[in-house]
Every structure is written in structure tokens, then in C-alpha cells.
Image (cartoon, rainbow, N blue to C red):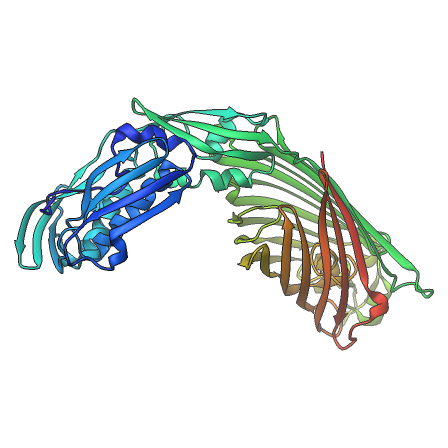
Length: 596
């Protein structure tokens, strides 16, 4: 193999006759033998062997070594021969001469298959050796992701002038492959139809190398299955078949958290008992349909109920529909009722973009008429009705959703809507004589109709540290823009799921930005010990005068796995403003997550 006209193969470099080994996952010993002249460096390239997990990984490693040669100017490098058996793979690579600059002609290659910078230079422009590699890589990437995984690129019409070469690139696309079927091995209670949409390997679609690379990660994100073996892929007669090894994983959950904290409203320093119950059902009807209900009791005489449901892949498309209902009762002040319906476009796995319509209304339990008589201002709580339209996006790139060590998770939400302040009969009955000598109420002085806008975001990043350790960095925030902000409009945070070190949902504001820094030591797949610090900047325009505070907390906790249940325990201290840490107001949260 002494000329540049030898075949350059990117993709699967080995003869199709050994592809059957690629579907197994037994250890393979890879041996690479180089034949080279004195221009090759470093010398360590001339001898190489390694242990790989499978034939597929051995092939990828051989490709990587060939890419190194190409990128360093050995453009005539290629595979001379191969030999494979059940336990090893031998690859003989010819290194060839090192070239400095190439003049590459790409006639016959579609323009959209070429890098943009190459087209801007013009076909046939002079390239550095790594430029030739990037052109070949882009061409083969397009082939591998449009149904032709065994495509190859070759260089011909070669003319050399010293260390410079003039050549043309040619593409051999190879056979076309389409997805055919999925077979599930194991007791996983999930339909192959759902998996075909979730994994984006629908029957009749073109084979895509990018899709195949993401199968294992996407399967690991499903809460109701466990991967027991790596998936196997079989090629034959233009069709691709998949064998998935999955077993059922308990994912329907029932969990509760009980919190004990000093009651700030009690003169006897009695304990305030708070709690919540979360029931979540997943994979209903074997189609990934989900339903959840979440009830919590917080503060004094305050409760909240959340209901939600989602149906993915409606009418065999990437569209899902969902609905939600929220009911909030805050002590004896007001009752909020919020409902919405949405449609989500599923990007990949659990990632999606969603549009929705939402309705929110407030009913007063107690009407504050005394404040109107003294200040002639609208009370903190007042009936309001908001109809809004919004969009949110959710991305999950965690390595393991239940106890991650690396990756990130991002949620963003924004909506805009019409807002109408409703007239409460008792408040409207408080009237006085205005400057014109007629009776008027507080509502007559207000513009009852307006536009409101709000946004929320939540970003978690997990950074692996040493063995079994990780650092979690979280940034979260929310803000409401409205002409008249009422107390029943405010966001509420605090407690085990938002800002540890404070009573459940005890902090209110129309603007909240916060962050968390948490160190985790993972002593099993689902268990960890953690140290944390969290803080939030809060503004509240309802209070008079306008207030802003910095709240912060810190502590430690543990999450333990006991059978199919998870036990959570957190101890936290918190402070707000200039009050400082008060050890007699420490917060203890204990909860159980029970998978059914």
C-alpha cells in the first residue's frame, strides 16, 4: 500500500464478514501492527495492544489510531489486512509518507455533505492535512446518519509534487439499512412500540449512527426499566434489528416527608408539624403514561394539592399532551385554583419543549376591610383571575436520574397573559366620598385589567469528583411582572425541596433568585451522604415598605436505600437578613420514598 490511492475507511473498517462479532459484548484483545517508514512518530505507534469490551469497541479503537495518522499528515495510511477470531482482533495498518498540504477535489459530493468552511474556500482549495481528514469525516458522518453505516471514502486521481498532493475524494456509500424491529429480553413491562418512539428507532426509518450511540443512555433514564445487558444490533438484508435486555424496575412511588420545627406563631415555642405525600404512577398501560398527585401541609392551616398527568407520543407522533391542577389554601386568607393543559414536542428521551394554556383564580376566605379604611389601598389579598399562554423547555443529560454523579438538568418556563382584578363584595362595600362628591370604592381607582409576565428557571450541574463523589451546583429563580402584585400572586419557597433551613414555603416574594452548593458522597447507586449550603435573594413588593432579604442555610443529610424504599434525613440551620443563625430553630426533615 504505497500510494495515496489506497482506500481510506472511516466508519466500520473491518470486512463485513466479521460484523457478527459486533453484536456481542465479550472481551476482545486488540492488536495493531504498523508498517511504516522513518517519518512516523512517536515510536510508540509502532507497537500497540489493548483489551476492549467488545468487537465494536475494538473497531472504534483501530479507527482512532488511523485518524491520528491522517491528522498528522499520513494521508495514504490505511488498513492493509485484518484477522479476527472469537477472542482477538489483529489489524495491520500501513502508515505511508507524511504530506504537508493537499489540493482536494470533491466533484460528485453533495454540497450539504461538505464542511461550510471548505465551501467558502471553494472546491479544490488548498488544505492542511487535518482539513482533508475533516472533509472525509463530514462526508462519512452524513452517510452513517442517513442509512449507510458502512460507507467509505477513498482518494484517487493522485498527483504528487514533492510533499504536496493533488487528489480527488470519492465516496462509496455501501448498502442502505432501515430500522426493522425491537425485541425485548427480560420481564420489563413496556411495549416495543413505546420504546421505538422513545429511542427514535421507528420501523422503516433510516439507520442513524448518532441515534444508536444514545440508546444506552436513554434507556438508563427510563424510571421503570433496568438495563441488564448492553443492547445488541444485527444487520442483514438491508434491515437493522435490536435486542434490548431489560427487566422491570419498581418506579411507582409513594413517599412522605414529616418536618418538625419551632412554631414562630406560638408563644409557648411549640413544635410545628408539617408534611407532604407524593404518589406517582409511571408507565400506565405500558405506554409511558404518567400520573402524579402531591399533597403538602405547611405553616398553620395551610395546604396545597398538585395533580398532573401526561400522555406521550399521541397518534404515533412525537407530540404528547398533559394537564395539571393546583389548589392552594393559605391559612385563613385565600384559596388559589390553577389549572392548565399543554402540548409537548418530545425532542429526545425525556427532553421536550412544551406550550400550554393556564387559568388561575383566587377566592378570599377573609376580606381585609380595615386596611382600606386606614390606608385607602388595595389589601394584600384580593380576588384575581389570570389567563395566560406559555412555553417551557426541559433538558435532562444526567448519567443517572435518581442519584446522578455527572451531567446537567435544565428547566425554563415563561408565560404572558391577561390579568383581571376581581371585585370582592365586602371590599367593594367600603366606600367614601371622593373629590367630586360621589361615593367611590378602591376598585374605582384602579385599572382592573392589565398584562402580566413571569418566568422561572432551574439549572442543576453535577461535577464528578474523585471516586464516588460529586459536586452539585444549582441556580434557580423566578420573577413576576404585574401592575398590581398581590400576596396571593407571590412565589413561596422554603423547606426540604427548595430552601433547606426554613419552614415549608414560609418565604414569599415576587422575585426570588437562589443557588445551592452540595457535596455528595455516593456509597451505593441510590444512596448518598451530603453536605450543603443554599441561599436565596428575595424581593417582596407587597410589603410596605418594599422589602428585600437574603436568606441562607446549611447542613448535612443522608439518603439510604432499604429494600425498595429510600430514607431521607436532613438537618439544617437557616438565617435571614440580620437575624443570624438560631440553633433553637434548626429544621429536621425525615422522609420515606417507597417504590411499589
